[in-house]
Amino acid sequence: MAEFDYDVLVIGAGPGGYVAAIRAAQLGLKTACAEGRETLGGTCLNVGCIPSKAMLHASEYYDAAANGAMDDMGIEVAPKLNLDKMHGQRRDAVKGLTGGIEFLFKKNKIDWLKGYASFKDAHSVKVAGKTVTAKNIIIATGSSVTPLLGVEIDEKVVVSSTGALELEKVPEHMVVIGGGVIGLELGSVWRRLGAKVTCVEFLDEILPGMDADIRKESRKIFKKQGIEFKLGTKVTGVEVKGKKATLTMEPAKGGDSETLEADCVLVAIGRKPNTDGLGLDAIGLEVNERGQIETDHDFRTAVDGVWAIGDVVPGPMLAHKAEDEGIACAENIAGMTGIVNHAIIPGVVYTKPEIAGVGLTEEDAKAEYGEVKVGKFPMLANSRAKTNHEPDGLVKVISDAKSDRVVGVWCIAVPAGTMIAQAAQAMEFGATSEDIAYTCHAHPTHSEAVKEAAMAVQGKPIHI
Ligand code: FAD
Ligand code: NAI
Image 1: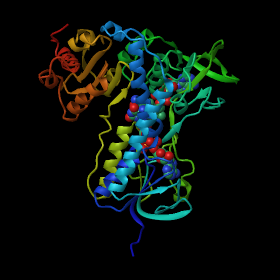
Image 2: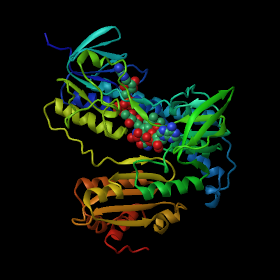
Image 3: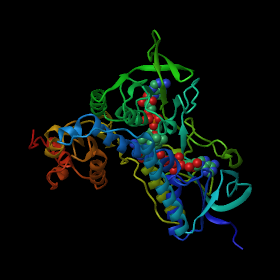
Image 4: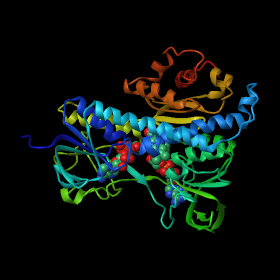
């Protein structure tokens, strides 16, 4: 009889966990995955990436019809919003994709252990009243909403991203607390559908972690789209009476407080790793000061046989980062060499235009390399963007002045999320800005702006 029930047991079926389980099974390991949700796919498929993109895409159509963009192209329409139907297509997208993971589990003979797992010891967990043992256990429990002290999320008037995806009617005034990725994506959805949107951000600029030029330019674009910003402002309380909320705010640096009325408040101030109820004490595994589980490069935790990946470990909380860690972790367990290059993980904000970046900001590049070269190219001068009536944005390429090796690329452009892939690939291959500048790009494409920004690093763009 085998010593353990499974070679690999994954806790959590988000993009980190389900991908790790599939890769482990593909490599011939007997694999199970514990998931307490009704459906597989984790935050990303159920209440994150997928439903938010379904609402972003649909609201983009509505906006184009309602606010003149289609009219500008000679298409005259009088749109009528059917929010129920819009939610229906969101739910269909989620259902299709979560069901797809269930199919992949069956195809790869992965046992789905339905329930929340907690450790009994380093090689066994309790799930749905049963003890299950495994030689290797991967923690992929993801993250959940960071609460704002003293503010109760009722998912009706005061909502998290989950509630904000499901609002039954368009709010008159939505206040978004936090000018990060969730605030801007979901704020954009409801702005496009007709809400007044005010975004309150603690810092002096939105989108922390992104390049300073990109942060500033993005805010200008959002402002043009009608989102109002209160920067350098912290929310100190939210009082709900019936269907209305009153927010109390004060300058982050101190000063007089003011109030703001809203019928919907979205709390989007970050996410925290999920470790409660996992029973980490039972295996003597501690979390760091940010509540994350630390691992080595191979995704091994401090406890032998226990591995961790995704949002529960340090690094950007992104689905593709979790997926790549899942693959690498499973490969390491199978005795291969699984690697994730954490220096080259693209990040994308799926607004219109999209905002994307990979590698270092100009500021960080200067700190790391001393002297850097920077090339910028405005989308206004890109023929395809101009033809499509999408002139907002720019591409910025940053290279190390000594070697010309590209160390950061930043884009604001309608398809920036797609454009950034070529930058990530070039950087993985150690490309110089000259390499990008002399690579033939198809015309007319938005991607030509990446080439021209690289030419600008060389001092010689053609179209500006
Ligand atoms: P998760 O997806 O959080 O999955 C963890 C799973 O573990 C959950 O299903 C949970 O139920 C389960 N679990 C937890 N504890 C236990 C336990 N003890 N036993 C069993 N199961 C357990 N990222 C992007 O890259 N692109 C996007 O466009 C994007 N959009 C987003 C939009 C929103 C609104 C949100 C909230 C997030 C978005 N993200 C996006 C982030 C992305 O969802 C996460 O980075 C990603 O889901 C992390 O994957 P994970 O596998 O680590 O964890
Ligand atoms: P975030 O970290 O992106 O932004 C939170 C913002 O809230 C920050 O700008 C912060 O300064 C601000 N903030 C914090 N406390 C505040 C306060 N009291 N008052 C006002 N502002 C305050 O977090 P967000 O948007 O909640 O997203 C969570 C995670 O989900 C992110 O790490 C992101 O990676 C992931 N995500 C990714 C998406 C994508 O890849 N497109 C989409 C949505 C989420």
